[in-house]
Length: 556
Image (cartoon, rainbow, N blue to C red; front, side, top):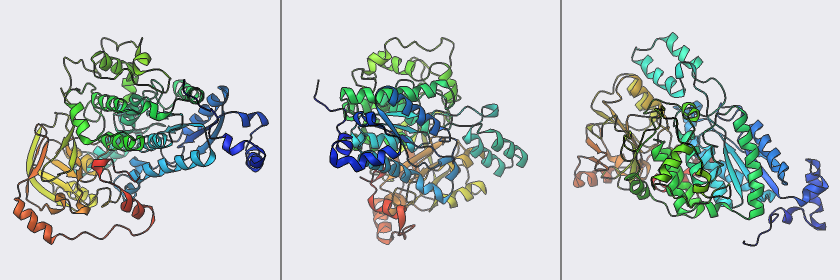
């Protein structure tokens, strides 16, 4: 057993006569004499009443505090921010979405480091909360547990937020009336919780559980109910145990753990954003992970979950049959998971999965290995003269495995969305949305509005879309994002013109334009970088610091 001090950090803040002023301040917020001898456990809450994903997390944070206190620690609550992707989508505000991941990580690191917490619980709901919390956990390397705030229940007629975006496209095409659109809008979001398909929040919650940073089943629980409250209490208790045992995040966040997370993400048909976020978390943990690792693992891992947006089922329906633990057990038994990886339970993945029951025999959500939805990964890393440093496609197979068409080029999301809704994008077009990368956006906006409009207009199998931005986990169709180098840095996507032929081939993992190298050099000489979106504030700071999407779009 390695030597450790359960109060390694808090003792520097509250012990001794010289720290009497610190203790005086803490007495004012409720500390008693005995509390100064306990490990201090921060409870990082992403509560905010601005989004269904996070509106309940304040109560969950209080449960985690109770768990930490009951286990012999002293819980201390604090807040960080959230930005709602669903609300800001399709607007200038979406530029702040990926930026919020960095702000969340920075703020948790700042508070935990500044206050001398010995460990912490981080509770997240909306998309960027989860990787932001995980990045902070990896950076700080203090005992920590992540808790997912839980999924939303389906709305009327199994609707969710994607139903609304696609109804907008249907309305533009004359297929959905004003009254029908309003009815979808009013019934799609019934209460608290993150978006209900295998979109980014549920994908990342599952990936973080597979990493070993969450208690078993934390990712597969509804936002409202006794199970989620108990999950939070147990997380508080677990952190105290980790503090006492001297188990730290980097004991858990090994290369094998990241391979497990990639495997589970693929099997679940998870969001393309998982690529971006897992690269970023790995960077914070000091683990070398690249786009090529997703390709390597993707060759042997099938897509097994028939989950929205490409499939039929919601997270609530997956929860009803057992969540992701039986899937992980199947993957382990198949030799596709590393069972020896340590987790926040203090046990290994294999030990956590021992005794997990398989799914009911009559369930239809998780396919067998003999009849997968796709025999290899739906997350396809592509390269070619459009994306020399890589791009990430989400190819379920339902939309085909290749697409060739003529470029319809737009400098920004708004122009593309107007053209799609206005009927100016036709079958055979490859919609190109550029200057939306990490630097160019700045902030790498999600293209749910244009992809939703394409699907709503009935063009999902007739139009492709490529971008140096990224996609919502709810986007589906023939889409390729994260194109690097991005347009703002003079990447080849900046050189595309209307009418250029583009070929996308998932089998060859290639994305190319039929433009000669000589012509591209000539276009490059004429290209000029656009003016930055802004020269001040957080967006300008982000644009100066951020790395390529191919490296996770990190700022540290």
